[in-house]
Length: 244
Image: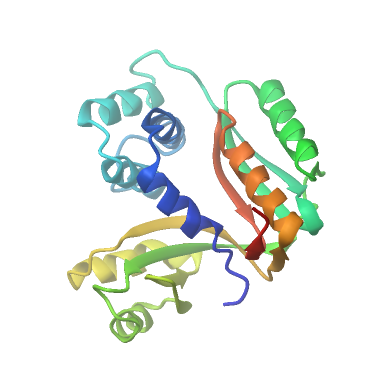
């Protein structure tokens, strides 16, 4: 599969060192509340909730926090209702951006997103303007030092995965959305412990950035990630060399 942006990898490595655990917890709680409201409290029949709980556990979120968020989503406790919105736009050099949000204030969020984009060489676009440049896929990642590519490939092909590739220290497995849970379960049945798993928008092709445009793009991504309510950012770029 061509065009996988490395930003998700960079983001995960930043997250592991990010001191702003409160922001991480807030985003996960929003996702648990929303996924419970949509699909119910039973994680065995609600794949989206199961992923959110896995992310919460990976972030060492207390069990009480997880259960309270599920109760809010199920209407057993009072809590905010979040609206799911995907904003589309452009960054420096025409980079395509998909910005997933769970917000309790649509006007505030779109205003902050528009401001961040315009400040760092980007612009907000209309619905559908860049979505066609991405394919939604399941992504399962393994630590390459624990599971060599050949080992992962054998299990992935047997389980019906679409593609596999190694990037830096991770072996990434790509699946069709409908096969995501089946492939995950196949790895688990073999005792293979994933590093992460997620549903992600994968760009079909990437724009290579360097110099000033690369520096602008990094600053834009950082600014977007500071906005309350933004859950995920997908972009079709790779950085060759960033301006200091």
